[in-house]
Image (cartoon, rainbow, N blue to C red; front, side, top):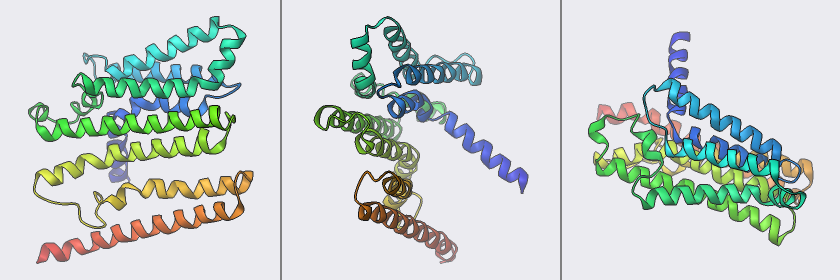
Length: 277
């Protein structure tokens, strides 16, 4: 049993390391950490992660070319680090306030730019996980265009939320615009990256996601539903919203997760009977 569990854990780790989510880690970390008084720290951590991701890719797959996202990771955060070292006090204050939105918009531009040149950045990761014979198939290309677009939209949501907090509310540290909305958008994008490829494969083979299956729409939103619970707890702890809203988020998140998981368990238990028929 331990061997099976270890094999499964290893498979999941390998799948994660081969996922475009790894290339997005520096941007995700910076988006979460950046803010007044945290610019240098956020840049340093993100640049270190970017360098680690780049090195890890070469060690795990010797001889492979550097991916668009890996190069962009190192170039962007190295540039930010250099600017931070030579910037005036006024420029540094601006960066502390708006660097999160700057990085989010930069990734939006990279994502949509890669789509415009017909080389969505996720395709370089996907090619390492499928046979070469599938690289030019319609389903493979469509999947990567969609996933890349979803990531672009997620970071666009994060960027707009940050701007609302900074420019409209004048609250750079607002928990909703700087944390809750941005992290929620990223959670949806991460889950979509895992969920969408099997959906496309089912459709290609003439199937359709059944209610409660791992490829159902409900299964897509399980992680986001679970996310509502800690958000509700934080709201209650910090008093950043009415008490009823915090309680409602906890209850809603719990009910949605239970409903989605119960539905999925029920669908799995019915599979043997369906096969028998």
